[in-house]
Image 1 (cartoon, rainbow, N blue to C red):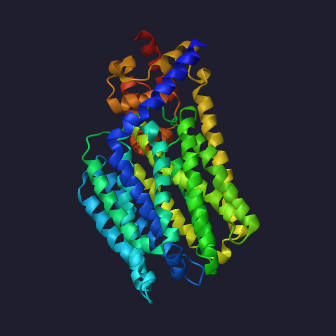
Image 2 (image 1 turned 90 degrees about the vertical axis):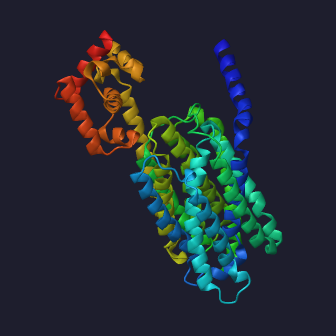
Image 3 (image 1 turned 30 degrees about the vertical axis):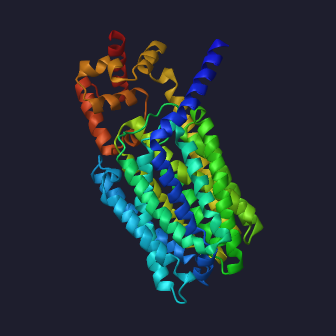
Length: 484
């Protein structure tokens, strides 16, 4: 009973300390709310969407924006991959590029409200908005990773809700949309720039969800959810009937509010669940249910679209959280690349889903995406739990005493065999994972290195330990661990 009371008091102290920990980051939070508000004003303006939608059944403005985003994220990811320590948040031109492109893009995208033949201007504005938004996504993730990571889901929820509140006045007064979005874009750039000058490093990962998955699994989920969202948006917003567009946009902003509620739930449940379990509990059921109900109903169905939007936005926002947690746990310095890779996968799949014409985004296609999503996630979860069960089985490694020795070796100071064998820090990390019978692929994902590099390190470990197989290595390390 005393342990439970102590745990409750510890949790209460942790919750009480969150406002104090977030106080230095208020400019970042204000800038983020401004960014969401600007993003929503651009994305959810019914008049612009109705005048810009093509008769063929595509949401052309949305698609052109995605093309600009995908191309830019690919370039940003490539740079981050080649320069692991590089951060766009520390590169001053990032803020100027975002601000300039956003101001120009917003002016062009809102052209249908003032010009009779705005198609070329809108197309250019959509592409430029995608390019500027790519920089915003990276900056948003890098700067938020400096916050206490446990608080991120709650912060994200407040920022999303704040952005929706900034959007709501435009429903009653169309004239405020353009000046308000321009002001918010400029405010966002200034707040982000101010936040970048605040000293800070990667936030502490204490109290966050357990890491039971890698970047590849999250990329797969990003692709599946992105395709579903792209199809759903084309089905609701890019439909040939302009009268249905307001209902489609209504479902988007209501769904975003629902996503904020899901993020608050993630905040309270994160310590009890792993990353993959968070996806299974708060993302997959909503995305899959929304797709299935939309397929069964046909036409523009607000409720299914709200459910789908809630699950998609929840995962979309959590990708920043996942990237920060993975970077904090692996200490790999690959935060920027992880963010860029996840959002590149999501945006590319959204583009692929939106390429399906509205008349084909029907029962058959949505049902197929639903089935693929559910089956894939179920299989991946079963596989991850099977691997966990294998790792917890001491009989495959040796005696119970050996297993205890292995499990106690969680840090460099607790690896006496590393010094005895003369292992490098990287070889020590890999050897510790080999002790847990982690497959080469999972080692590569967790350490952000290629499988060939992993195998090279393993061969070096075998050579230093004078063994020729993993079983022999386990025996040698078990003996050294006991002696140590």
